Image: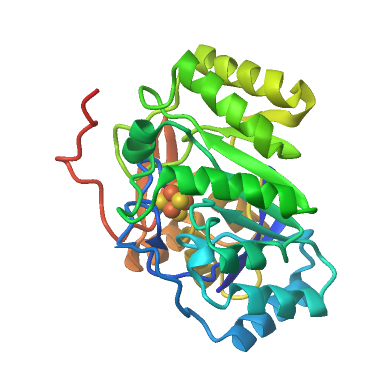
Length: 319
Ligand code: SF4
């Protein structure tokens, strides 16, 4: 349920809360760093007993002193029907800001809006405002409609007084043209987040053909968003976070909890072992015994925990 804290490029030292398990998500993004969605769903349901989750978070906050607590699960956090109860319970007991990384796809629902209004920081994903691209890139549950989602995000942004940020993942050949950048930017002007983050697939993605676009394409999106939001509100997250995660207790169990939600670079594992006086090769052996693989992406080695492997038949969608 709880992992880290891990260094987050946007939020600082972040204690992760994994409130959804078994990759339940409303999307199956081609770039997802935890692999393909095994449980594509739009039905909110209970995952953990809320008091148990709150107790574990509060205990970890007291022991590990993170800067922020972030709901960033193995899937979409708003699928958790107890999200509001959990957020209220945590906020009553600790002072650290509470953040959530959502894909925003259920923001047309009033109960989801009510839950997200409780968070101090809400991140929503808007990779595209084009229906065709959305279907290829985010591969949504068939029940979802892009128009409802985009309208829901705008209505939420008008009611929310906390720190709203947005994420825009760019994938070569999918959402990488000038017209698309212009349409995304004019939509985001209406949402008006405090900060918009352009992100790139830098960790092993669900589909092996996914690559970051060229620097020129990134600049096109940056300029378009900057002209809508102002240059001081647009950031490109073009690098990976520095330093190893902070690990308390059994290092193998703690690393597995991190790998449930994202791959870890090999150099982070080595740095972690060196701070804890552990031998990286024996740690790696233990992790491999628990189903962890090593994958190379963009020339870097990563530890990954996949429920489904890349399919050799996985192919790029036709234009
Ligand atoms: S990237 Fe996020 S929204 Fe997309 S499939 Fe993965 S968990 Fe779901």
